Image (tube, rainbow, N blue to C red; front, side):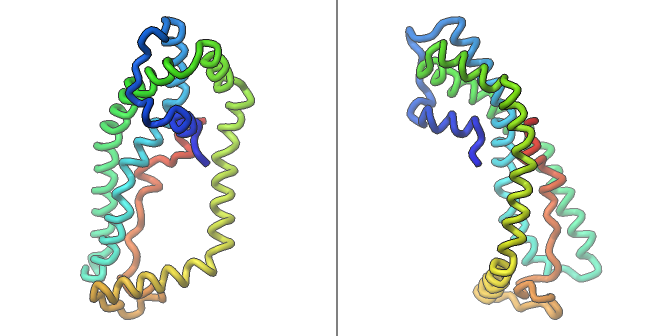
Length: 210
């Protein structure tokens, strides 16, 4: 489900990103535009976290394959060290991307909002986001979305997991990786999986706003 901020950005269009509100703005419109951006700041921060997290899955996939070459008695230690490195990356990188995302949203979306919406329209949008009904909706939907995701995983696991194992096996063959003995049917591309630390290292999008 697209966030309200994403939907608004799509409505404005990429061509409006650097629009300048020459002769169409006013102090009242500017104030309303800034309030609207403030209401959407949680979504901007979530976008920043997702951008920071995007390189992690490929990195973990490579680490999972490489783990087969790590002595069994050192795998737990190496896994813990990898998790520490990823957490350090999140802790150091997220504030940089988040702060820049907020600043850029004000520089690009602000002028576009002022140009493309009337003062009355902005009042209506701001009032909508401030309404108790919308705030309740934002509180309820993350839990409902998580429940949907769990049901989808449960209902499709029987069809998806065999295909994942086949993919892992085929990719392993292409890379010349020999299945580890007793790999437990995980496709044989590597030894036990490197635990993904993203759940603890990067706050989820659903939790970004109430």
